[in-house]
Length: 308
Image (cartoon, rainbow, N blue to C red):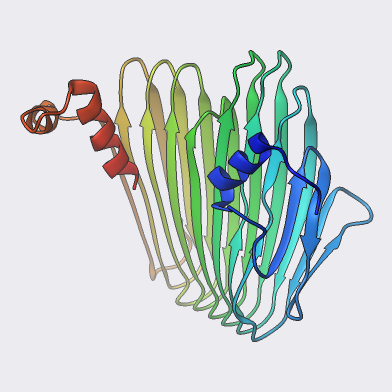
């Protein structure tokens, strides 16, 4: 494995909770190069030959195994586009940890665009964790544009945790999913923007089989002069259940736009959308201040609890 410097190690801790080389299958990417790769008997990771990226094949019936594929960038002015395809065999039950950390101390923008495609076999279960983080004192932006495509076969289950809490100047997250009969998708997005940052999240979920279900929930905080847009559409093409929710806190001069869309193409498609945007209640801050916290500390406590 390539030797990593302290900044790269810190980024790995932030986006993948890695303090050492992970057990199981992994591919660590640093500044557009592979810093280390390992397959297992049940999980094979191979580089693509036509474009930059990986094919990750998980054998049917694989249980209690994980895949780590984090990306770190520390070179200013670096741009990369990566395609990673996951093939999860029937009845498998695995955890996939991705994420990207950018430390930009220069004047040029650094950008990572990652396209992840998941082909989930019958009755397979996947937990997918994707964290984004930015740092560095340079004037160049830290830009992350993740694209996620999910194709679920009958009875499969996918749980996705999407987290972006600090330091990313500009992001466009696009997620599409197609669910067969009895498939289940759960998405939990946590997002915070500040200063002049911009974050756009777009979800389009098609419930194509009887008994398919989706639950897409975003919790976010917009501070400073930042802007957020949450655009979620659930399409019911069969007897199914769909729920999408946007729950946001707005602070200072922040702006938030929630765009719900529900499309029912079957008499028994049950679809629900909820949205709430507001400021922190004054009584919450006062209550915490009576316990000895400053106003700033009280706000931080409330935000941390909200985004947990």
